[in-house]
Image (cartoon, rainbow, N blue to C red):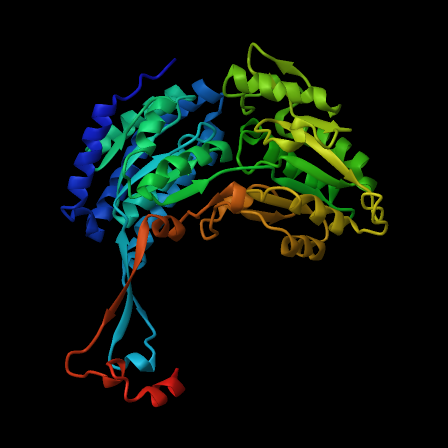
Length: 472
C-alpha cells in the first residue's frame, strides 16, 4: 500500500487554521489541556484494536508486544500528564538578589505555539503520540506526520486523530519525503523529529531559514559492554531480549558488543540458549518475533551477515522478511556492520584482551580499551554495561551517551522520570513526563518591580557606584 500525499494546499490550510486557533488563547487554560488529554486517552482506548491490527499487518508485531512497547507507554504518558500538568504549568517563584530590592522574580511556562511532530516507522504509535502528549499538556497545537513505511498504522492513527480532534487543533499529514520537505519549510514554532542522524541534518537545514527550534531524537551505534565479571547467563538473556525486541528495529537496541575475551565463548553459548528461551526452537514460527519493515531493510541487514563469521543464527527468509537473531565474530574494523546503525537483529562482537590494548599501549585495562573505542566514535543514544557496577560507573564517567543501563538493556526508557534523548550525533533535547511538557514550552522570565520604591543606584551618573560595586 502506498499512501497518497496530503496536498500542500491542504497542509497550508490547516496550518493557518492552527495558528489562528492558537492565538485565540483557548489552549492556555489548563482545564482545556486536561480535557484534550482525556479525549486522547479515550480515543486511544477506542482505537486500541485498530492500532494493534495495523501493527501486525505492517511489522508482524504481536498484540502483546504492541501493547507493551507502544500503546501502554502512550497511555502512561497521558495519565502522568493528567496528574501533573497543573503543577507543571504553574509559575515558579525565583530568588531575587538584593540589588533588585523590592522586585519579585518568576518563571512563566508558555506554550511555544504550533508544533510539527514527525515519527519513524519502528515504533509508529509510541513515537508519534508520546510527543503529542507533551504538546497538548504544554498548550500547543500540532501537525502529526507519521511514516509512509507503515501505511496501515499511519492510516489507523489518522482515523483516531480525526475522530477525536478538529484539524484547527491537531491534524495529520500523510505522504513521502516531498510532504516532509514542504512541512519542514513552513514556519512552525517547534519541530519534533524522530529518525536517523542523516535525515535530521536535512531537517535542521530546512528549519534554519525560519530559525525553527528543534528536538531531534536520533540513533547511532549503541555499544553493549560485557566485562570479565559479568553474570553471563543474565547478560545473554537481557541482551537477547533487547536485541530481538522489534527484531532489533529499535533506536536504543544494542548495536554491537565489546566483550572481554575471557567470557566470549561462554556468552556465545548463553546467547543461543537465551534466544531459544525467548522465542522457542522455531523462531520464524513464533508470533512475537517481528519482521523487517520492507524488502529494502531486509536486503540491507541480510548483507551484514557476509561481513563476519556467524557464531549463532544467520537464517533468513526473504519471502517473510525474516532474519534470525545473529551473532557475528571476526568482523573487520571498517566493516559496514560496525560503522552503520544496524536496525536489525544482527549483533557483531569486538573482542578485547585484558591488559594488551591495541598492541601499541601494552597494559591497557579492559575499561580503558572500552573507553578508547567508544569515545573514538559518535556519541550513541544508549550505552549498556554488564559486569562489576564500579567498573560500569567508571566507564559511564569517561564516556557520553544519551542514556545508559548498568547490567540491563532498554529499560531506562521505561522510567518516565528519566529524561529520554540523545547527545551530539544521537540527538538534542529530551522528553517523557515533565520533560515532554518542557520540550513544547518556553520558560519565560518575568520580573515584577514595585512602583512605591525606586532604587537610585541604577541611574546615571551612578553616584553610588563604589557602594554598589562592593555589593556585586
